[in-house]
Image (cartoon, helix red, strand yellow):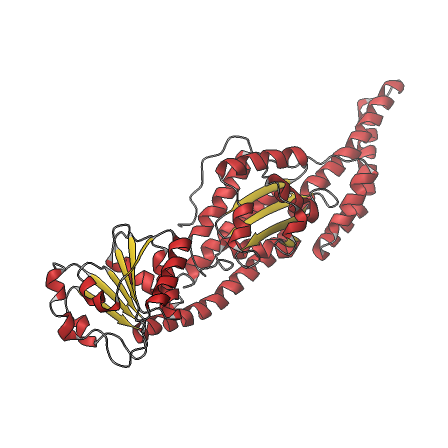
Length: 446
């Protein structure tokens, strides 16, 4: 069986395209049903997340779908013109398809390196395909091995340790302080690029509202319009002279101005905590020079972090992940090699049995034709004739089977098997998953 994957992800297609190609749960079930009807000899798993849409298939050597047909299937399902999707899809076959799946399941292909959600999503996609009866011997073995490799990657390395950008580190800090964000107010002071990037990370937590203050009110208004449109959040532009007063009602503050002197001193901040009834306040000061005096952070209810604080955490995480990434790649390459080395034997097993059954059946038919025609033949002679026929069968098959096993080690057994299948009209039954799901085995934590 040949293995292939076609798909698009956050690197190959913008979100405007990915959202057109995405599948919800009901659409996945419908798509799998159509796949089974359109390509009855193929196994298939369809994976759809916010960052990727991928179709994994296993099919006979010259079977269907081809890569072009698989891409056309996804496009047709969503009533899209394939010509409009040029450059959107990537594809991999055989060993590269195996490597790609292992990387995806292990989160090495994710937007956030080391995130754990993707493994649960791959497992859910596999289970949906199994329920639809589209998982057979090939994809069953492949995905189970992928789950094992992913578990090994996450248990043996620090790939999921820490974030690797200032913005994502700020979000991690916020999550340590606040249990929820839908009732929180974010105050952005300044409209610098780095502050905007950090703010976008925080907006992913879906806070209740956002206030923006900037010395140039036009820039604040422009930023407010873009953020309101892109993140569907209530945004208010406030006069720069009022932002310190608004600290009494804010929960998260990002400062990113170009001031040469601190815009928030300990003296000016002193009355604010009491007005807040000492509720927690997170201040992320990413300005250089700093916008907030360090003494502000001495208040018990205030969590103040400057750009150096965030950068230390980020650099530590990056270093940890670089070392972890090397270990992950070694684990994945070992897994790919082990899978590919064992695959020929798994693929040839049903075929070899079918070949033996075919020739053994011919021998049995000829024996049943011959025996009634032999008169006065003792049981011993009958057994000798039967043994002779089966010895001839084994000798005929000896060299072809040895050749198949040798070519399996070289990776080209499929060509020989396909030729023999056509010559002798062999029909090899592939194991398929049952229509009703089996109880789940314990898997990796996600």
